Image (cartoon, rainbow, N blue to C red; front, side):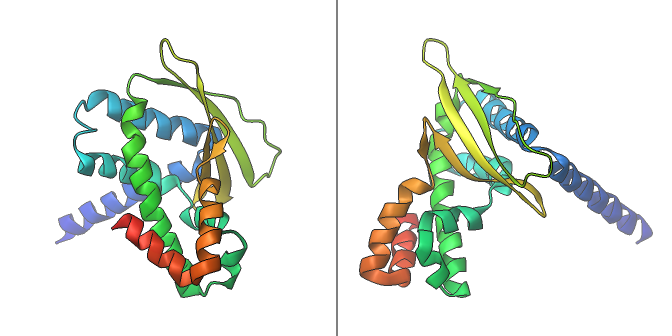
Length: 198
């Protein structure tokens, strides 16, 4: 019994150490680590695109722990967010998370054969928001600029929006969401998101 408890305590200590390390990473280091992990997984797994479950698992494991879905959903929904009840807000976050997971897992294979260059982050001391800029490089193709909007949270730095070539992933949904809430209300938006995820 004591041996089992010792193993469990050791496991808990290792998980805590991993979590503390992730929290200690600055925004630039976090983007480098996450992107390098995804690029390595894509490079080593030739069948990733064909296996949707593996692509989803990769997104869940490597990327999603570092995304602030509440902030992303709030940004996408706009002013209507503040009219939603706490229960409606939670449903929106859950459904928007599902939507972003699908988008990211579908896009994972586009990283095959690419390398990544993270630009140095210039950030004031004590800043709680920043943008990390990087470029995806592929032989024979122009560099693709990608920006990660990030916010410091109690769990460490989190990504809340990604812009590719100047187009915000989160804000591309705002006009659509505003139109839905104008005609069908907040519950209509939740229903539409759930339908997209079904």
